[in-house]
Length: 107
Image (tube, rainbow, N blue to C red):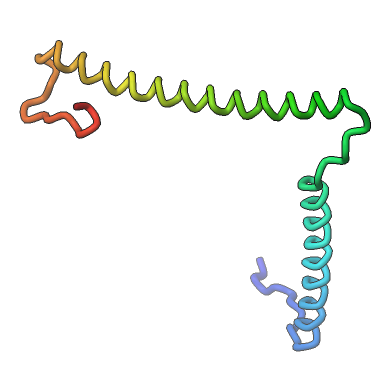
């Protein structure tokens, strides 16, 4: 087996050509990304009638309400979980390691 490889010599001209080609590809990708970003974050067109305007306002209000309810549930579940885990440790002293002290948020 012959370990020689057939490589072409690298010249400054070939490096410059490759750099120009890569810069062109980068510019093309940048244009594509800019177009997609503008499409995604474009403002909504004005409502054509009163029903569409009311539905848009209702959907926005429901999204805000759902976010608030979800935040409340997450807060309630996490605080309840911490409280009950500490209560269980107090009820079952045989499972508490020696020298265990509860963390600040358990109190």
